[in-house]
Length: 292
Image (cartoon, rainbow, N blue to C red; front, side, top):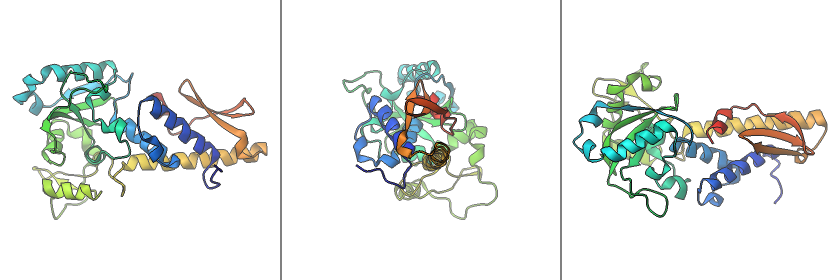
């Protein structure tokens, strides 16, 4: 297939590198995603998982510790806590959609920054734990990704309850302070059911809590596709980076873009020309590569 002249050759190679990484993570149905959109869905995958090797600092809400169900699920929650703090993979407790349908956005995460864990230590043949009706909701602080905040035990379908944000606000208001709306008020505070309808249509909505505090897009916000706005911005900046880099190298070495190759080794990207390293990339996504 001929290279699309509007897409940088290096960017296409970058997309293929990320696709290969996702395949190694057992992510399915990647061929359903256009090659140029792989970086966006790769970032979605990073947001939805707790990457191996990252030792997280865990926080427990007052509501969770007082919940009568906490003692019943204490063993599973304790395992999740210990594995998060030691940098072990936690994918087995998370949604199967992470690997089986990565193209479907996690709107609870993209809107409010919330992931959910199933509360069973019974690992099934597919590598995931037994699914449970009860779920541990946790807030991912993307501004400080090593912190994870365990909120409370909810059930499937409780994706749009404002109580979720109330718990974060009452326990760790500083963690979500950047998403506080302070320059204006909202004339209508959507109900839980209205949030469900708005989120279903990929519409971002501000919410007002019991004390009058207004928040919006705690998880980064949704695009018209329902994907994370930060994922889209990351993809756009990556595309711009490779457009500029490729043009610079083509002009400097008087070559065609097809002569350049992008190599990913030891979590580092290098551009080569005829097997000779000509540039070690220092890019906006170096931190992302370190999470692999």
